[in-house]
Length: 288
Image 1 (tube, helix red, strand yellow):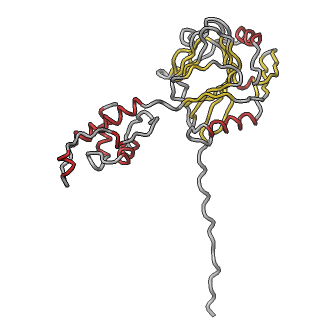
Image 2 (cartoon, rainbow, N blue to C red):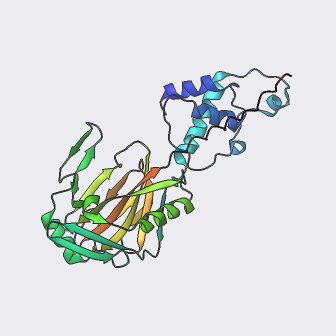
Image 3 (cartoon, rainbow, N blue to C red):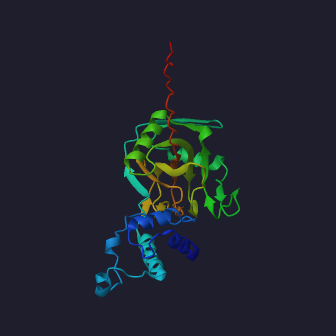
């Protein structure tokens, strides 16, 4: 961690020896820079104390600021080693239809059966290579060395609103935060032999918190897995994967076969402001 962040944390802690995890939490939350999210709860009581028995028997001791810094580094090390629990994978019964209309292509299918390989091949020939976001230069680029594949934007396919509600329900039941979200269809992504997408993070946007992907079929026998943390996702029909936008992921090169997915953006729902209390008035008393 940046020493500047550590020093800022120390300045925020009222007790230099960091007596409680609560003060540590408050210090981290008030730090001027973002630090990695905590994946598991840190039990402060399990941290080995460097104080001797004689020190523990003393009623009053002077705290050394360097001790606080040492304790913070120990906590940060535990945070960095914690498993990231922001990804999930499950199978569901996606009994929903979808439609594609692009150029002269019109297709009506079901998520249960996915996208036919023949249609994947046709779209790969007709669509231009997919773009990617260059976060360093804030540009949208095309580079087949970074990403080779095609995508169909949401103006060319449609899904029922029931599916969006169903996805939001899955997100909520999977302990993601925030739990109240809005789901928006984004793209259908298709990759063929040689297709890949190097390690990247999704492009950020205001109130955009996650990505939800439904598999439309994968015929690859070598490669073509989406690697997200410890997960290797195949994009088979009736399966999905969801993760936060700041989680790095990579699509391994397809040695053969085809794969297709339907991607959705997950937006946080701003908490509505409480309605102002109605102003009640009482009739003034008349003085007779």
